[in-house]
Image 1 (cartoon, rainbow, N blue to C red):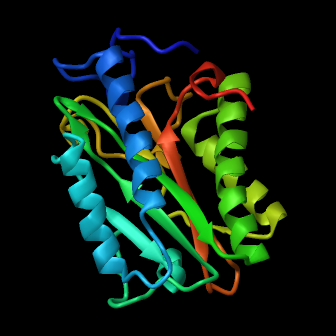
Image 2: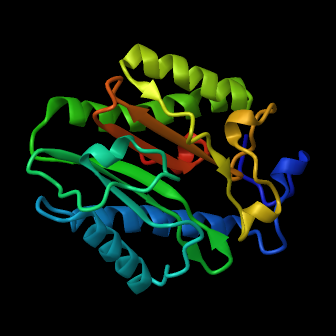
Length: 233
């Protein structure tokens, strides 16, 4: 599977008139950079709402002011909530805590979307959850790349693997299309309901893990792409 600027054959994978491989990759690059910069400014004692305001301003300063879904920063107990559910207000990041970001900036005509979890201080289970969310993202991405599984099969694999890791997979975050703006004019269905092998540079793969006791969670998302788009470790 190679990223292409030709329309995919399945109706769910159509692209808009402004679609550009270079544009989509630049939007992704700037999204990942924004996540890194926002996370670096989040410190214990910060209130979640202030972190959201800071994230919005930072993206505006980067030229990413237009966001196609709300900017989300989730602290502590709010990390278990589905994205469409509002955070409990006033949550303060503690000295040993967990938080995640979920941002969706636009760069010109192109949609970015990315999320990642981070920890502060020292808490083994928080660190493991954050690490496992990203690990599982790449494990799901690997079976997509190597086996050509459908979107539905990918999330079945993700659920089974999450359970083996000791976590619960939140199916309220089932992946979605990404494109030149707005992808919703092309397709609004989820990746988890897509019954064909998804094409590269058409979908966002979302992984939201939750502690089985629903005390905390971790999130990672990125564009579905092959190994060559990820730095070697």
